[in-house]
Length: 440
Image 1: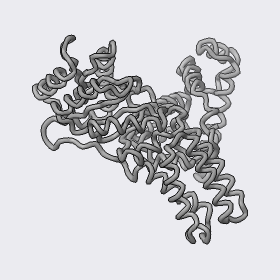
Image 2: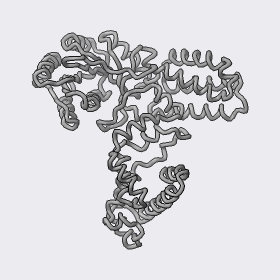
Image 3: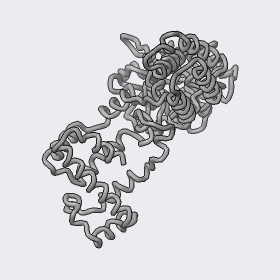
Image 4: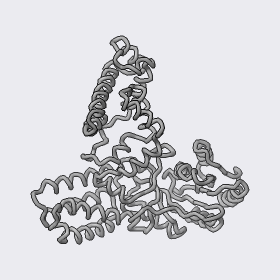
């Protein structure tokens, strides 16, 4: 996530930290590099210019130059200004206090709008009965795609008749939602290949008919600053209330995320962070700024853990650990808990670790291979790894589609982990060593 710009900022910060003292000269060098990093990330030029001016204004003040920790003060200035550029806080959705709330999604074709409607509905369904509305009558199979997603997410679905136009579908959907006691209607409108006047007029008609509480523009995060003009045009016609960036988990340069708020005044409300329906997050400017500067996003990590981890199962594992009974069954349970939290690369992006490519060397397949190896063991073998002799290991390798070397590697790692756990029980201060072993 934002790997390119994160890597550039990491090099800049390292360079500043190598200086024996921070002077106006090396601050200027750092600011020049930051400017180049932002431009390479496809951030809007006007935004870059304003950002650099604001950083310079504070960086050359006494607060930084005469600080006890000038480098850290400079990093804080950059961090705070990044937050300002993206918006000082998360912009919440607005709903009606009573009656049916309506969200209309709009955007260009290929931005992932249909999938985003399902993700948004899934995100909100704990507190509301959600109805997805397929008002895209132009793209083949758009309604079928939305229907499949609605079933996967256990959401209501309304697509109207085959010959109904989008306006009629939306009007009928509101009537249907009222009859079936839905709280929230999310409309998937047709995507546009470009700003098409006829289709824009159609959206204006839909807006007038359904009076949406939110009009959300859905954009591919990889679109860069080019999306700014498109957002502005949609906003001129519809007065959009916010933006959702999809594919934020890809190696995006960050142009869209860092340009939209300053140039359009519209806040990014959500980001899509993967293909699964639960890979969908609130956009927190302060957390994204932390990731860009290599500080991680521990708050999001903890929130994801709380939402994904079975606390009862975790408590059982903890109890077994304290009683020195932690075996490969427990290890398998831990792996599955981690998989529930999402991709390893996404999780590592949230942790404050050194280096721009901290997650690049992580092979997601290792987790799959590890799970397959453990599942190929008998209950007795999982309970006592010491009985895994040569013939057993060959059988496990064959059953899991892996090699004996991979089985040996797993058993060795687990043995090291058990020894570290033993130390931890005797000396809680050795927790750091345990975490290092688990990371390995």
